[in-house]
Image (cartoon, rainbow, N blue to C red; front, side, top):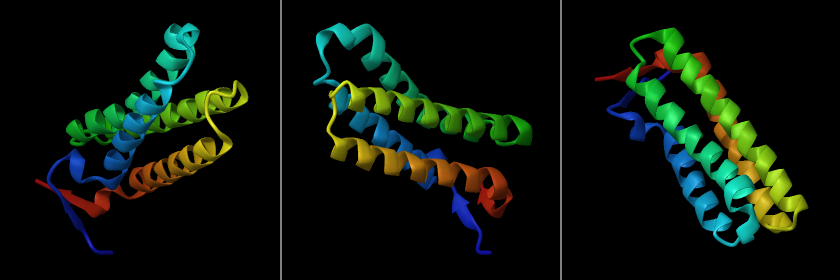
Length: 127
C-alpha cells in the first residue's frame, strides 16, 4: 500500500470533511427556533465540532498509539451523536428530508474514514 505523507492533521481527508460538516451544521442551525438555542442547537453544534477537534487532538498525540486511537474513537462517538441530533432535527421539522439525507450520508463517510484510519494509521508517514 502506498504511504501518504501527512504534514499536519489538516492533510487528513477525514479531518477536512469533519470540519466542513461542522460548519454546515452551524449554518443550518441558524434557522432553528429560538427556544432550541440552549438545547438542540447547542448540542448538535458541540457534537459536530467535537468530531473534528478529537481528530485534531488525537493527531497531535499520535506518538502514543492508544491515545491516538482513543481520540479517533471519541470522534466516531461524536459523529454518531451528531447523527442522532440530526434525526431529532428532522422529526421536529427543523431540517428537510433532503438536508438530513445529505448530512447523514456524509457522517456515514466520516465514520468509514475513521474506522479505516483506526485500523491502518501505521500506513501513514508523518513529519
